[in-house]
Image (cartoon, rainbow, N blue to C red; front, side, top):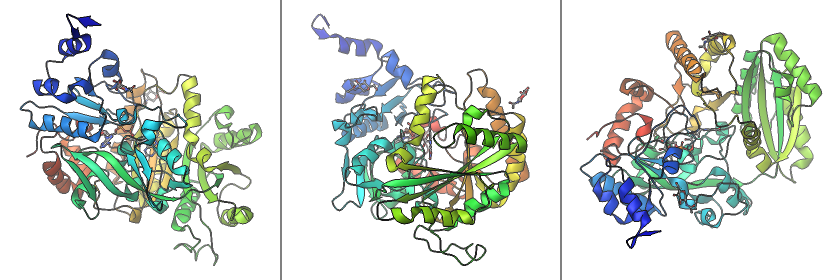
Length: 535
Ligand SMILES: Cc1cc2nc3c(=O)[nH]c(=O)nc-3n(C[C@H](O)[C@H](O)[C@H](O)COP(=O)(O)OP(=O)(O)OC[C@H]3O[C@@H](n4cnc5c(N)ncnc54)[C@H](O)[C@@H]3O)c2cc1C
Ligand SMILES: *[C@@H]1O[C@H](CO)[C@@H](O)[C@H](O)[C@H]1NC(C)=O
Ligand SMILES: *[C@@H]1O[C@H](CO)[C@@H](O)[C@H](O)[C@H]1NC(C)=O
């Protein structure tokens, strides 16, 4: 539609242009990439958590890294304060990818807004390329891990460290850590990156790695979006396993459960003995390639257990065990195999199970292909969606708990605070090896060699989430008074003092890096770390 010869879109842009944003942006080439329509604005105002509503002045839809760099240059040079938040898939829970009154960059525009479910999306695929020789893949920061998996599998390759859920972006998880059951062996996803392209808070496009601009490289990994926008990451690959033998073991004793988990993460992939080997006879093991676990509190309906793992009959037995003991623990392990190792897989798993202390008879086995295994959470998502239970508030709390205090944590939190008030959603508990993390990176973990990641992945109604948040605060207070030195993962802090405490000895470096790469504190304001320039 035209109005006296001027395309309506331009009139619309001027008419709708939020007075809060500077003129430099509207007059610049990249103005055509700006969206201010209510639907786009609304979508960028909230996230998976559904706990916040932070309305940006505009959404920016880039077609290249250059667009992003230009936007940041304009913001950096402007006399007016403009904040900019890259938004990956918006799967934060506390508005970390928001920019109230600022600009949200919809990173998914770079790959043509693919949904992730396309068998092949040319625009998305164009920004993923497997290196010659197959040692790594270069992926756009906006790529979903499921897209990276699909493209690398065409070469029989795959990244080795994952998240449980694959519809998260490379840039989003690398800004935190990226954890799943492989991290005990390969480290978090941030430990599996060779090189990054980053647009800094000054609008500079820089390449960084352990050798080239190393300070920026270490800053950005686990950096909560504070130092630059990741537009490309070069990620380590391995030959993709063909199949996965997947087991679930039920425990009624928390100490037995965590001891077995710790034993399993002490084994390395090729069957070399771990440090607890002497206690477990003089035996060589092939360990699991993936180790996780979960806690189930109190009475859960039989139907909650029913899955591809548990038959109707199994579900009844497990539910009755849970009712009897108040809480049960489920250790989950997987061993990868292919045609060459197929003949021994049965035996390899058996050997390992022989020395574990789960409740006799409570071992359940599944056998799936690699994609089916990695993409397991998607099934649950589709089910929840069809029941209207996906787009609901998620007052999650994720903590790292030092190994020496995990039993106290069990008593005070699982069997204490949480037992008193049940909530809906999985509770994940599994140990990690700190030697797979790089101290130079921005992420923070407890000081002990082994620590547990605990995820309270709760769902709630719009009315009840504040109660759950109160409970989260109670848990943090409990840890504080008991001297359990937990660290939050995907941290959500209330103010500067809490951030300083969160980063601990890393705070000084964090602040220094902020001065170097984003002195005007433009980037990812939704994290709530910096609300004004630092230099
Ligand atoms: C269902 C579900 C399952 C999950 N499972 C796991 C799991 O198993 N393991 C795990 O580790 N985490 C898990 N998470 C948490 C998840 O890793 C983080 O919330 C992550 O930030 C989400 O990625 P995203 O792309 O949606 O990021 P967003 O929420 O869009 O962004 C997160 C932060 O990173 C910044 N950011 C986004 N893109 C970039 C970029 N390209 N460069 C720099 N900064 C950027 C944003 O500004 C924001 O501050 C899960 C989350 C959900 C909702
Ligand atoms: C992608 O999404 C943005 C909204 O963030 C929209 O403005 C843009 O037109 C979409 N692009 C395509 C190719 O659909
Ligand atoms: C716990 O449950 C009781 C009632 O069952 C309720 O009054 C209380 O507010 C709940 N507390 C929390 C923290 O959810």
